[in-house]
Length: 285
Image 1 (spheres, rainbow, N blue to C red):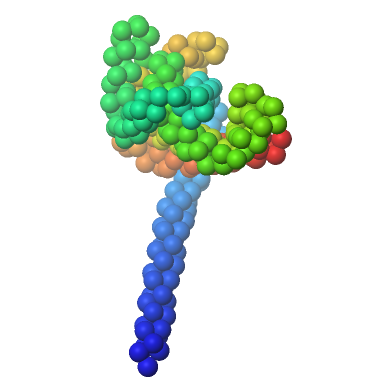
Image 2 (tube, rainbow, N blue to C red):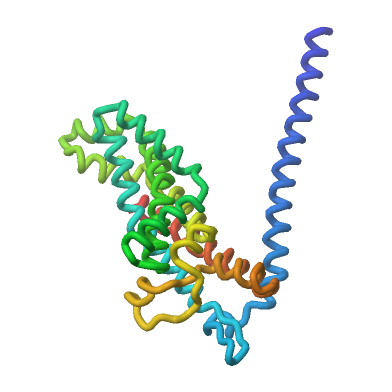
């Protein structure tokens, strides 16, 4: 009888826990769908071709965010071009080549600490160094290098954790077949850890796209089209998140803010899916 009672109590306990887990999962999904649906419901009707293809004009009393879209893309791809080789290279060195374990532990602790620093502090440092000390002023290149410093710890830690999941037997088998150290890393370790690298890339894209405080200090908030890529990098340019803040909070254009939020979500989704697809192709090759 006691065993039966314990068994019945355990079954009830498992059912309650399962119900709570399903309830939490459904609640989270429902809140996410509600949030995304509300943003799209308010924002998509206000997304027009004029909004996407022009710049703001006080003379014609029109609103356009094309310069902000270009600035956002420049910030994303400029940051990734610099931070991915640096972050992945540092992670490979710390995981595969570094011999002094104490130094590695100190670096890992430092990177974990840097990931938790508020972004506005990065913006302050970026403004003091890139904008004032180097004399660049508010510019896209100052924003890019500030974002590189911000996202580098994330790339390093996610890549490190992914490299550590590769079984040691894979390394030993490759070296036993006559591969050199770098050949083993390039042909065995990196393909097995592509998922982690892509995850770090996606997390970095999310932080870049969602950043506003640091970019207000470094990249500025201008919305003017540049004639060339070099001029765009050297001039001030507000990202979509900065434009969202300026229109919704400073000017009270709430509907334009929802439109920009919808564009941001679509842009983030497209870039993340592209990163996933590229990662899958690299892993397959």
